[in-house]
Length: 254
Image (tube, rainbow, N blue to C red; front, side, top):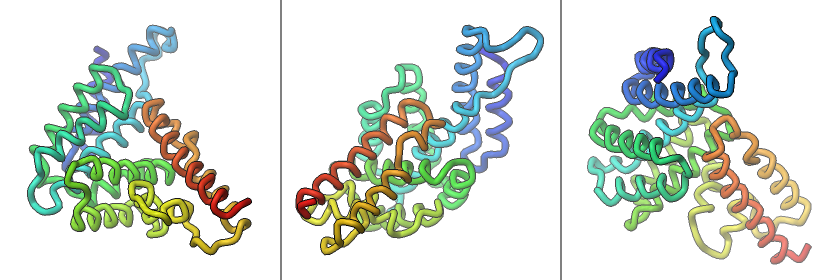
């Protein structure tokens, strides 16, 4: 293991707020791995030293905030059901194609944050994430918060939904974008229109313009810094937008 990675992880952990220790440990692991991979590829010249991998830092920021905020959502009513934790773990295993070592680390991070659930500062964590990622990254985080909450067999409670809406506001996500993201996890005849953010009586040109805007704002390339695993998730979300547009086009006949 590269010592530099652990030191950088400890430094970040010391300034990352109430979840600092968790941030530091996870970040250190990813930086170590990135350093070793780059050394193997000859990317570091002798005598120059090592540098932190910004892609790894973006990944850890995203995953740590996602897990922390997901547990905060589950803890909205003062108790976290075991089914919620298991659903969260299953979501990462089933939807994020990380290797075994990283999956084990993520599962441990979920357990650690669960133990610290009453100390999670939602406002501080959301504000931290808002300042470290792009608007597209924040939208992806919101979509995954909704999807993870929905994964529990009891569904999303009113209190949980209110908490997610509060987090969206803290992330700087306007309410129309929240409603569009929420529609992706819902059902019903008007779901496709809600995803596109248009009314059922909208004309063809308005619908086309809305689709183009959403396609640009939610393109998977915009979250490339989060790593291939999260780009894959973004591609699935992008597909939902495309499917909604195709459905609306069929219904409208254009």
